[in-house]
Amino acid sequence: MSAAEPGVLTINGGSSSIRFALFAVGGTLQRQLAGKIDRIGLKGTNLVVSDQSGKARATQHITAADHGTAVGFLLDWLDAQPLFASIKAVGHRVVHGMQHTEPERVTRRLLKELHRITPYDPDHLPREIGLIEAFLQRHPKLPQVACFDTSFHRSMPAVARLLPVPRRYAAKGVERYGFHGLSCAYLIEELTRLDPGALNGRVILAHLGSGASLTAVYRGKSIDTSMGFTPAAGLVMSTRSGDIDPGLVYYLARTENMTAPQFQQMVNHESGLLGVSGMSSDLRDLCASEATDVRAAEAVELFCYQARKWIGSYAAALGGLDTLVFAAGIGENSPLIRKRICRDLGFLGIELDRKRNARNADLISADVGRVKVRVIRTDEELMIARSVTRLLDLGWTGNDKP
Ligand code: AMP
Image (cartoon, rainbow, N blue to C red; front, side, top):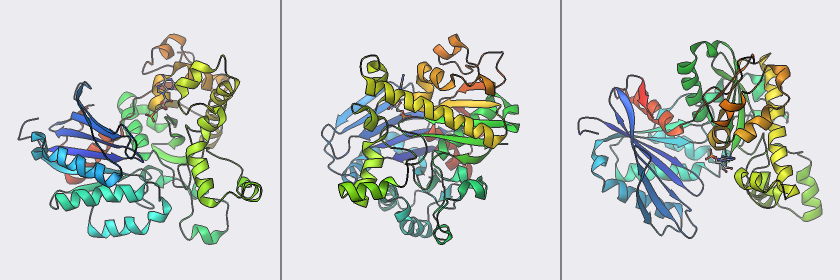
């Protein structure tokens, strides 16, 4: 990055980690470095930084008992980097944006609104607001942009947004919001580049990582998505249950004296693949143990079965299917899981090519299949950087080198 090239910093604050990346904005967007602080609040907290080729450049052990300390450390570290002088704006992933349909420049008014909507996402918003405020305090003149993970789904029709509870709750904002929107937006941009005609058709995006969701897209717009009012809904995930019978709340309250916070903890952190297998939230561990451990085998089968069911259901919602996209940790890297999900979906026109699937090729469907099945490496950080440069008109012309 030359001094003449402006830079954009992206920040993605999770529950126990903060990821960041620095992009140079010329005619292209080029990632200069990427890093993360993980295991915040646990033993072995590290800052790991890699360069543009993905090679680890530095690992530093830090003491960060809480998010605030980790944020302070990150700001000090960034300030000490010569590249920091080039940064013209910071883009934040903000998981919940209620009705916001586009990325937005952070103002006092927006911050006030984010504080107000915190009850809609008490797990993520307070930390994300904390990150924005820490940057504001340290660099008050540096523009910041909030990129909402819910925005992509604001195009959903009312029938997909409505939750079947009394109407008075809908008036208070209780509806399906959907998440993984930055990933979806990126996948749709990449799909347009790879196959411009695909966007005229019916697309299912399968973002399968430790959080997992499926999204039905018609003519480039989200028409339904499996996550709901919170990210705990939909598919079975690493530690989140996904959809369960709402009657379980009262049953567990009666028989186990389970409180609402305990229920929240259970469905978000103790359920899903971890809960069913009783051994691991990581699908790699489960696949390695399924031959000898029946619970691990059941967890893997449940994941694939549910993904298959949601594909079928969204094909029905779309009135057919033209393109299926696999993305995120599992979707991008596991031929075995993709194969099992697509088993018996020949009736929809989904046929995988064994060799293409085995090498995680861009196009993994067989030529005889009606549906194009693709693997696209999602990149939420790049999507944030694109959004910031577009909003602030920093000169990006639309070509990237991720
Ligand atoms: P993400 O949240 O997108 O970073 O995805 C993380 C998850 O991807 C991990 O929890 C793993 O379960 C999963 N994963 C990554 N590589 C593989 C693989 N080769 N096979 C199965 N699961 C994988």
